Amino acid sequence: MLYKFWVDNIMNIKQALDYGRSIIYGKLGNNIDSNVLLCHVLHCDTTYLHMWPNKPLTSIQKKMFEDYIQKRLFGVPVAYITGTSGFWSLDLKVTKDTLIPREDTEMLVTLALDVLESEMIVIDLGTGAGAIALSLATERPNANILASDHSWSALKVARMNALENKLYNVSFIQANWLTSIKDKAFNIVISNPPYLIEDDVHLSEGDVRFEPIKALTSGRDGLTDIRIIVKQAYTRLKEHGWLFVEHGYHQANEVSNIFFKAGFKHVSSHRDYGNNNRIIVGQLRSTI
Image (cartoon, rainbow, N blue to C red; front, side, top):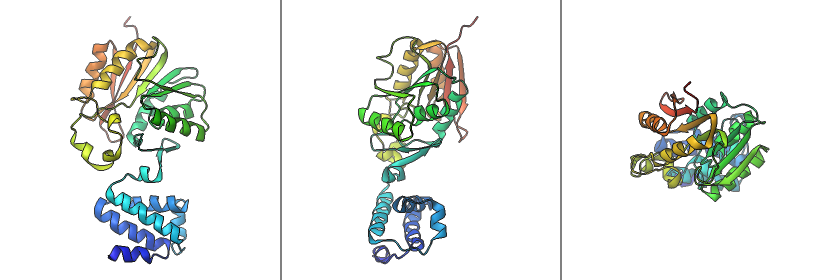
């Protein structure tokens, strides 16, 4: 009842933030979410909140902010509440049909950019909101990027993100990994595929509770889709082509072995920003 009374009597930005923080911090231990949600309501940046703490909110703005705080209290991810998520240098639309792009996946982009040259042909498998494909397209406007996903709903979101960011060197295809792709078609295959086991305890925690389950889990050991991708990529890559795959923090050895067994001879493991082994890279090269 105290919180309800407080919300009904919010008069300015500072009071709104105090209210949001008192609820969210007590439940989630996070003060930043209130700032992000109020900025979304007011269509402003965080600097504005500090500059105008006494600016009154309209009744509509108060109600919207209260609704957002209650959703966040229930556990709904901030990105799904606002409908946007930052990744690389982009602001991307996200929906319940797409995963929320994570900062650690930016390392996948960084590694790919080290070898991505003009005119190369790249496919991003399981593109979701388009985070990887569109980030590569931003940095290499002369490259040819293909973004694929089995979900038509996710592809629509990725296509919308490409249009809003004015990225026209990206094409989209609905496909089940590389099944419908001809051999030796790409210089680079890149993917952040599902890699959680079907009964992973993390599926009942945090933001992933609200994310599409098919984009998260992959069989009893979490590696079913990675096995398919690696096997298919070996024949779909051009000579000297590269394969980049993100995996779970504890799966580096298993994924490396999958690469070797598929025929990749040059395989390396890379750490994400949290210092976890999360990416395996392989290249098709002659051993001579």
